[in-house]
Length: 246
Image (cartoon, rainbow, N blue to C red):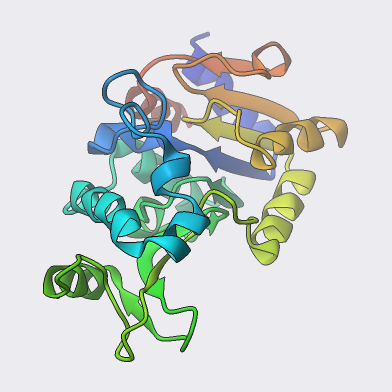
């Protein structure tokens, strides 16, 4: 039996199934991950110097110089076959929920209502007046400002609706993620190295409550030995094969 077939059998027999996704699921869409040498998002920059909440408060122009490039890199990106495979599992009633560490909004674009524990770049907000705008409007305001800082109608800098370094994860999103992980018969990890806490602790919670764990990611993870199935190939090919086996 192939690894994809084994995972398909787990999905059938270990309901409810919850997916936990990381940066690796979006790499086939042309979005760089975080740690790959030379090409990763943090390969040539110290995130503490450009993406920390204190930098946004102290020097919004420096902050938005980095985030403006990040937004441009995401322009036009579309869900790939791995996002669509999870959406298909959900459509068939085989996937109870998705928890994602990603901020790219591609699960939503694929038709999945994911719990976005790190927020999303789809909107930006003014912490002073509460004004919220779309990604397209944020980029338009970046282009209009001489310092490249998107600002509200009162002139205050917008902050992307993502969790920056130095910020806590939103409590409501983590509560929903925790409830999904606690109740999962199978936690299906896709494209995550399971190194960033507190989300990286969710597999341990699933296992502690008698659930099973399956991992589809190229990198090694701290949970590889505890996983019932570990698939290390291309995430699109692996998940497409799983759907085909169901």
